[in-house]
Image 1 (spheres, one colour):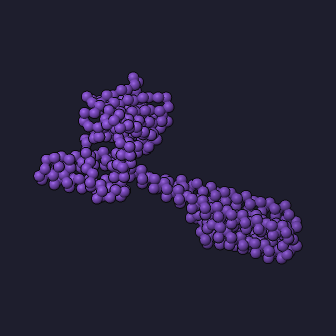
Image 2 (cartoon, rainbow, N blue to C red; image 1 turned 90 degrees about the horizontal axis):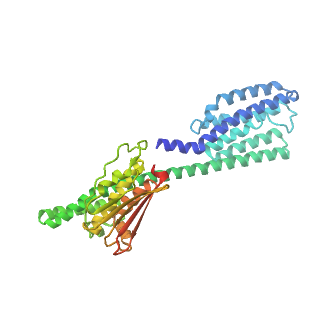
Length: 400
């Protein structure tokens, strides 16, 4: 969370404050240069020298103040704008016949207004630029067209920048919230997959066995069934009414536990997918593999193997223990494809959507969710009476 907040602040806040710091230093040097160039025209040059000395000291000493919105306090903004306004009004004192020439702070004044815009948005910018406009009009007494033009330019530009900053901050807050929701959703789906592959399967098996045994075991099975329904409803996010879900009894199955490969962190060595899928082979499961190692990142290998396990579990549950299944691993230059096919009765049309609505998220979470998390896709093809085929694809760039 801290890392995300730091990245979000850098997207708009940090570059703008850095630009403002550079602007203040450059415009301070520009104000000094303008005075040096026209120093002979001032009737009271010491007034200008004294003000510019204060301006230089203030600009350099307050650079840390314009490093971020937190350090740029209201008190600082008030003092900064006061210094700019005093400089505008002192221009007439330093040179009563100044006319339409530049003021003592020149364009440094815009930096004070921009600080208001970055700190508080367009309303603060409008307030500061209005004070600057009044000071310029008072200093000119009879402002020329150029003076009015410059005042309006600063006023409009500062308000526009303040508005853009407000919009950018609102967008950042929305994006940060969306990222938080996405992270929470992914974590929830991960937990739901683990629950589906373990707790829900055990509860379903207890319910089925208890109902078959009868007596006290039947009561235990009934309780297990109620807990299964409640847990499925929780996993599905409350989409399944308990009364409806309780009418459907899960068939239950034993899920093969997949050991996590060594070095499962992102920095681990690639794993050979063949060695992880080979234990699934048996009398009813045929495993076909390439002759060369199929290397995958540990995390991707773990998720892909778990998805294959979930697909085989669905074969046992819905096609029966006598169904034949085939696992085919294909290692292509641009992707890795694992296909799980069976010779069962297939899945009736609309059954998957109905199962998800009832809180049975085996295909949605244990298969498709796992592949989505590693950048892959899962496609399920089923024709009633002709079996079911699950095709799992992981792009080569995502797999290694």
